[in-house]
Length: 185
Image (cartoon, rainbow, N blue to C red; front, side, top):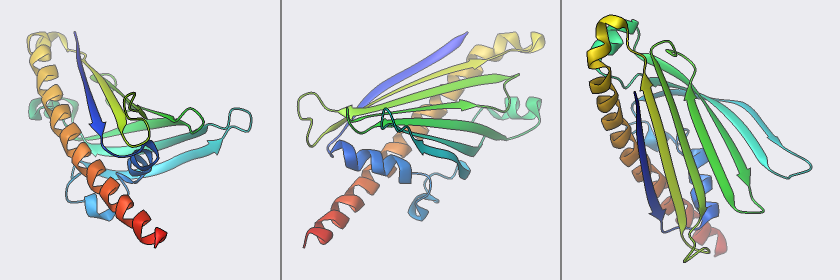
């Protein structure tokens, strides 16, 4: 069974600021005490396609495995490695992030997609964020009856981490806004 989680959030900041905040979310030292589940983030590649002018990046994210404690005991580790790919199209003002776990795939598959676009009603100063997460725990025959409960617990963690991530993004956006106001002086 696959659990799906979707939400939409409106940032009251321009698209350029929100997408800048997205890149800084994991690397900003102020966020270490908030994003405690993130252990390490490394940029694997970053390139601009000369034809389309789109920016393509890939990052490796190492995080505490947010699954229930009994699943962590079964799989024998509490660290998960993920790949986050990002496509930024500055011309159309669109940014799409896709994250997938690359470890623990025998037990769990998680795919998260986040799309940032200018808000249709206020495109110059608001940004729409659409987040979609699909979680599939592959039950061992002896644990088939608890797989659904484990997926639900994982969704609860995703909801919590999403709220924390939005708080971090808002804080970085306010910082970037203040920084740009100082530069304008």
